[in-house]
Length: 75
Image (cartoon, rainbow, N blue to C red; front, top):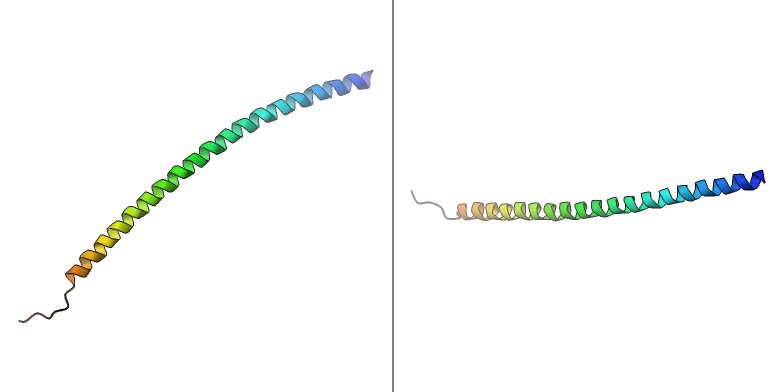
């Protein structure tokens, strides 16, 4: 009977361990979802920042090209 009692106790401990692992798994899945949402926001912000920089660069190139003249000045 001692062996049966030991096995029953071990089964109970393992069931508790499984319950804890399931709760931890749910918590970690929630954290992963939050991190993916954060990464999506950061990616969107990066795209917006780069688009702004590219637009400024295009304006700068346009301004510089307008400042260059191909005609020689008569003095």
